[in-house]
Length: 101
Image 1 (cartoon, rainbow, N blue to C red):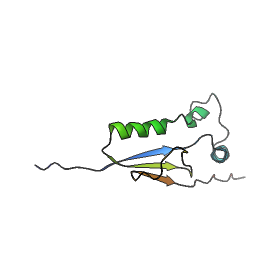
Image 2 (cartoon, one colour):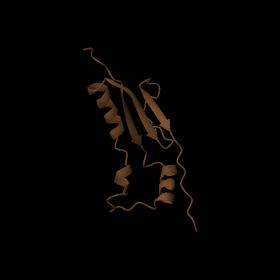
Image 3 (cartoon, helix red, strand yellow):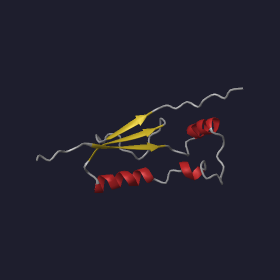
Image 4 (spheres, one colour):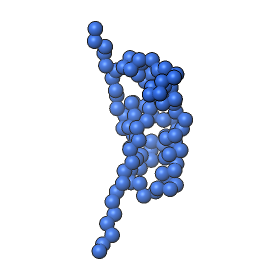
């Protein structure tokens, strides 16, 4: 029986929670974040370099990953090497909905 290989891709969703443009959209859509909220607090969107360390781990321990897609709201991590052929950055523009009166 022949050994069949499969390409495995990885998808990340990432946002820079310190970006003033993103914060304005978030606040317009959801409202201002509350420090004690379990579901919508600053810690949920804080960038503690998790994406950077996760990508390093993938490079070291899962080199068989075929492609890596990073989906983000028109943001690019400053440290990301966008010339890496394995990484595809999907920049999407998310508009804040207008409130109905």
